[in-house]
Length: 531
Image 1 (cartoon, rainbow, N blue to C red):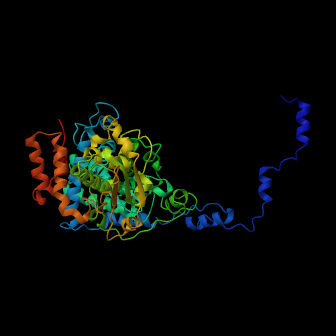
Image 2: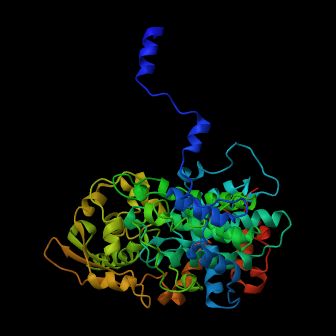
Image 3: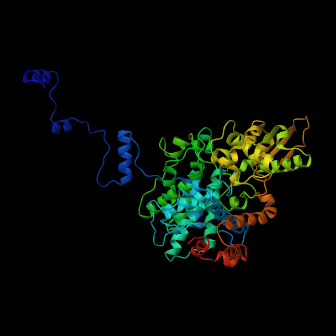
């Protein structure tokens, strides 16, 4: 503590302060801009900014991307009898089936249900294949998680990759909840919502690579779902813009959980998380939460500067229904899509080996000609730690059918992976990029996902190379793929319902489209609910 003498000595070191009132009179006000109380807020804001050089408080017009998405959601008319609606109908049942199949895996089901055990929400969202009735936010997480868990739902590949039917987690959760409150929502409304969510996610993915900056594609699920459910919840155009802006400013998921050495099950519930965030953000805006008009373009603080290396988004085509019309279905194999044609080729090679009286143990080497994207995402060496690691490793997805002649969801389990022949064969498999495959992967008229296997045997025999450019789920093979897609759905519901109920479901979803599309959403969901 200072004594009085030392206090006086310290005070002498500093000049006496000018009284506050006097200090105001010493300021030179001749150069200050007038800030009259009658000036408009914008003039006062400009004057203040010019005076002090700080950030302008003027709220700009919303970014054009936000406006374009909102205008599309609110104004674009989907052809009610066109290819997009027919494809969306297939996509709906396929996506529900993938969710039902995931319920066979405890690692998935342990994440489901309400936050507080036993909670039943009046008029809440019902989760297919379960007895849960949840608030729409938690419902979106549950539905979105089961849809994505097995990596068996649809896909769209471009500069960014993704699974647009992930958005059904949010769309179905909100539609089912609103239908149970008495609002009019039919299956056709689900289909239109899916088409628009597909288009937003895929349209952003065509030329904009989020993976190149380390961001996961579920950011696009969040944005697309937010836009679509905003309209479903009754938000107007401006509120929808606000909600979309909230989705862009929300913390974005990193791709860390999709890549070695950190690959893990979070990649299987990341879309469910994005769906739940989308519903939550739309509901907050409905309650009056403001948006962020320059969330993308704001200097220093906007999405472009913070997360996209300063690059604005580019768009290849206007929003329409292109993505749904060209979506890829995973029909035959639950495999990451860049490996689908490689797996198909492996089935062919397995049959050839059997014809020659050989087995996978006679293989000396396997060369996979593939696209650049596959090498970046699923070309892995070394031990594979878990289910999520294996279904994103092309050498595992090729080795398994070369040995066993099949690849199913069970093929990725620890028990299946314990067979030492798998890792022994994996060590003999390597990838090389085929530039043509990489180019045609991005061509709008092709969008191929080519792979080719060249197998050499221990005795020096080199088998004919097997090349597959388009998977059976591609638009170019839609006629071939549609019956197989129905078989896939039938197989997925067979594990949950008796024969009579399976027939009831199939009669509705594969019969005349008019009764199916006009079915109220809650009645559709009730088809899959368990007591």
